Length: 188
Image (tube, rainbow, N blue to C red; front, side, top):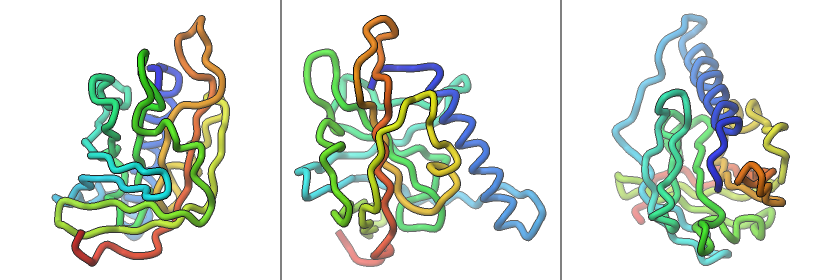
């Protein structure tokens, strides 16, 4: 996933909007900061694609979403301002499709299909299981921030489409939408 300040700004706007909306909806009309859990997601498993990847926390630095480092192409990242997978709210995980020299963690993501399973192992040893509802490829200039950051469920995001050699980035995003079918409760 090539760095893109436009994409990062859209994501930041979505995270901020989503956090405000979630805080407002849970606070009974009064805006309060959402309670943060000490539990974090630690691994992503997509059996149908053969993906078993560690997860790292991604934050916002200087107004931009951090991305997993290119030096760790097999690692995906959980946006720590999103919901912890297995809990209420939108949980967002980003990963690179490739690096300059090789495929990365989400290289096969566009092959995932409706009904397939995505599992998230959490730091408390519990597993949240999701069912894929849909996959879409959208231009980065049409990124559906409200759908990604305001609706419940898991969102897996990577780059896709054609590569723009002038801008050194992919033109689209591939977004997987999944619904929680088995709340975190059983050990990994």
